[in-house]
Image (tube, rainbow, N blue to C red):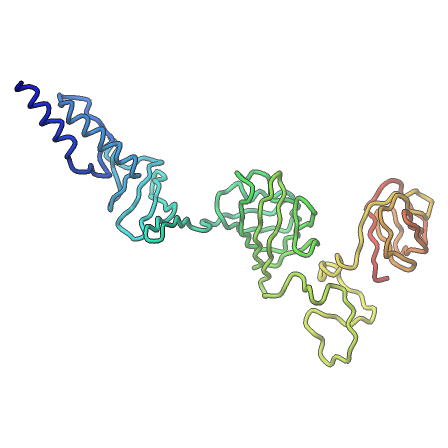
Length: 321
């Protein structure tokens, strides 16, 4: 009878004990003798630390080493909203804020800046940073396929004149045309999966738009202008440097595949000749300098001079004539 009374009192003590601290040690004793009750309480304290992510006003040191362990979580209650942190082996990094007042999880947007050199495939997911400084003038055709998930976004800051080569799937550029950056330009890139990217926006360093939907590139304006409007040129037939006005060159040029036959002045297997006509300049590997269109059909272009090469080639036609 006496033994039963003692056990009942002990059970009551366990049930009515106060809440265990959220940063109890996760290190169980391995030497000496402890009672079953003490050992159970030690285990419960360690479990409470895990369940609460080591919630407390100071950094936890619940490992047997008495120090924080790489990968360990900590809900820092010393600030409001509380911060969820993780130890990276050297420091506690903030994963986000727990807004208990509004019941919201607020992770940081972005973080970190990495540097990358422009290549045909410029991998902007090799480094986890949200912002990448891009340098170099090698034309970029893709931003890589190593991102962990579809929908990842990266902000790019360009330090050089870097050509971005438009592609309808792998590199979608605003205005559906290739674009050469200027130092200070910023772009937001969205990963679509399978190595495909879309530039959501490009912000030029000078604040101007990449394309102006109100006045499309290559629009001819008529008027008595004492002073030229911004981003316009007099149209009196002067030569325009393609490197200086790459967007204009893209706007007034149509490029598609066609098949050349040396000694013949007809380009065959042209996909679309709509809008093409006599007098328009033609350029391609195997097309002589100064060649123009003399006539077209739905699938052919007849040139003013004969071709000097054989095979399928990208054919560029200047639609301004």
